[in-house]
Length: 332
Image 1 (tube, one colour):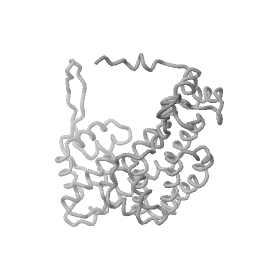
Image 2 (image 1 turned 60 degrees about the vertical axis):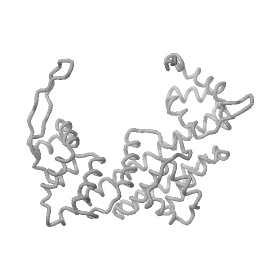
Image 3 (image 1 turned 180 degrees about the vertical axis):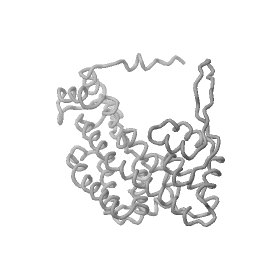
Image 4 (image 1 turned 45 degrees about the horizontal axis):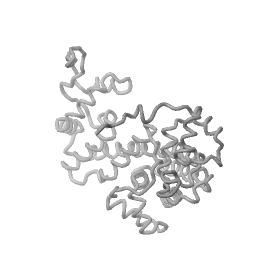
């Protein structure tokens, strides 16, 4: 089977050519935003790949002269979704970071209150079981942010290593660990922190009562926001299977009906957002929680629905925004 390359199928196009393609091939209209404004937008504000990705929230004509073209999709709808996505990420990223901080506090407190642990031995055991995490610490030894801590709490040496192509380089190697848990949590990433909680709960069952099945979606959401990935570019129903705790949590929200709960929790971005809201309610301190939720509530009540009329004919988008509002309203 001969495969045509992307270089041939998807050659470089100017903003003018991209607008023509959207109009003629994709069926995108330019009533709310003119073609000239759309060209300027693609030149100055956002690239085509990100902007056009939001079209996945729209259906296509299946038959007739317009087969394969999008239904009721104006270019302004794409730019509005892109803007809303940017604002949404800006509000929920700090909330993800708040949760990560709160979890670190819980981990340290659990060990401080455990008379069988001195805070050091548990770190040695953990790194012995998870060699790849030790490697990740070695790779951070030269970091301006963590290097000083690593140098202080680990016995390091430098090893000359030769690559397959014959190049030599110096690699940091950990000889031994003299690191307490209150330092370790500041060095490792979110994923390693979750691994540590699982490790600790296996040794001391139910000591840190946070479900990794809820933590991992929040970590995924945090990473997506931190890397500026689009969140709202596909709000269609997917095959995500929520944990019983999250299903039960949403079930307790009186404004969300059973079918709405089932459908929206299969959408990965909405599921991860729901996990964030659930954890935020349970682990973050009250003062921080109230301030962040006030900011998020203001966004949901104002900017999110400022141009809601754009999406009046699109049930995927309008019902997803409505779901977000119901979840936020339940916490505020």
